[in-house]
Image (cartoon, rainbow over all chains, first blue to last red; front, side):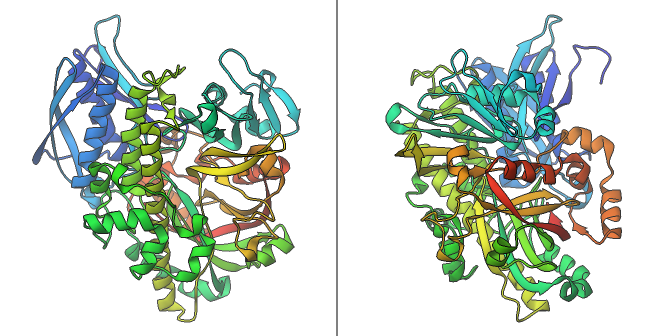
Length: 143
Length: 476
């Protein structure tokens, strides 16, 4: 984990059956990007090549629902395209999110993907600005 | 969890007395050691479920309960539509109708051992498993809707299964009143190429040997003898169910407030059964049940094909196929009166006792087979439903061992490669595309399934019939 608390980074946190993911960054958008990296890391520890770009948009009544929608949009694109994504660029404007995802098709030999995420949940869902100014965004993902 | 927080009703029944917004008590079935090992979140979640409108009798948790989302995994709760009861997408889970089927091969360990490795390799080639795997079946839109309406019966009409299986599948293989029109295009898109795939995580296809008979009479009725070989499949409704869960969890989270339901937490998202969204969810969930039933029927067909190659006379007769993530309309006796209830079982297996009208004739005196998965190292159990489970838990029992630690912790503790080698040395062949997945599913990461099924028996939920040990495990 980077030394500076405000620098962008992600973490997994424990849950009995599933897995918690959390992203941190100087803005909510960066925290969302980092959480998506944490999601990819649930599946593979290998590098993911940014060969193809996919764009997604989401709209939600509040930032926490928007976060769940964002993760579920990434999960959907991974599932139907059979791809993994290793780079994310998120823009949040009010209740709307636009994002680009860069990745490549799953390579079962190289990525050795473990479990597939089924969906992001509202459990342990929190998007917040911490006292030191860092944004944090996390929830439990069902795997 | 501290046992002092409960009123102990008997050796295996622990009650959370109603406080605050709880409408009914919450009851956890477990022995003291299992209860102590449960996360405090199970207490919190079981109590939260007890606050939901229309809940009947109690919010229950099975001996393998653990922290879920909204409802605990291992949670059972029944709601009355006439009392403004609710249906909850989180109370069913993302993997709608995830379940287990066991097929009897008619072979013994002695028959299978000489070709064990060849069968393991064939199964791993024939059964698409793991992230990025693709089935050989692609559904066009009319095919998708037909599958969502027909379930296992649809699979059989397509040539992937046998007519005789139907009476040994819940709902006789087809969940009625499925509504493909309530399933989103996203969900259908996720399923287009996933029929006949196993998935990943804790899903598996195992070739197992009967290691111990615990009830002679029931075992004979189920066709189980010591050293007999069976094939057991654990999987669910794949991407379709996951997306329906995702879609409706969101809709319900946003809509609960509009319906005037005060939620202690957004994760308890639910909708009145008698509401537009409640009815739509029901229609979609039933379609996902059919997807899971069809999927297990197809996987069973693939297993038959592999066994048929090595043993042309082997039939692989279906013992039973039962789900553990559902919400079903059932009639139960409550205070001496029959009531129609919406029974949520999330990580809990339906366990009809002897005499139940919905059981096929051949199983009616014994009770329903309750199929319990353990871990790939320690084995599994077959139980039979008990009449007492009707009163105790709306005829429900446990569903598996349950993880004793997080996947994260398991990954730190074990090497997948070493687990595969160690198990091979003890006669269990693992076939998985992901060694990391194997580490996350390490036998040591699971609770003791033996303790879970014993507690289920002691609590009067289901009785133990046979213990199975794995010979081959194909995992995603």
